[in-house]
Length: 168
Image (cartoon, rainbow, N blue to C red; front, side, top):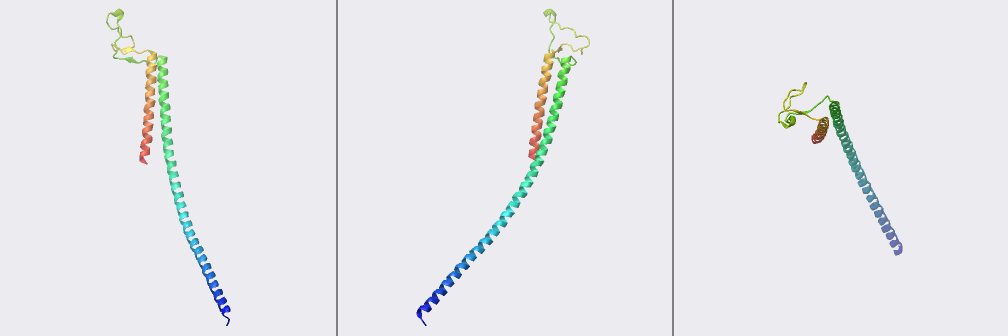
């Protein structure tokens, strides 16, 4: 047999074997990559589902907290409005002369500097030494008391929000 023919058959066999090995290697890599990508896709899908579940849970909790805050806000605004109406009514009564404040600790001025106190006017409560405040002073004090009530309602509302937040 011809040595060139034997060498060419050996060369073709080696070339065929090399091509087969390369094809198997490439197919194996592709197969492993497909398995790896499938596993990665599955893990990613699980992670996305977990994120969606957590997101939905926290959105529901956030909505619950917003509802609680809305209830507290509505309650605060109602109390503020009621207090403002009460203050406005008291101020209107004071301006109309239906409401009069007096200072029990102030001494009324005596007549002509004699140092004696005057007698109480008919229809008064009869307290000696008491002095009625002017309408302007009464309105001022009632307005300031209303502002103090408003601040107290703000503080109460803030405390309610803080306590509701701490329950969470």
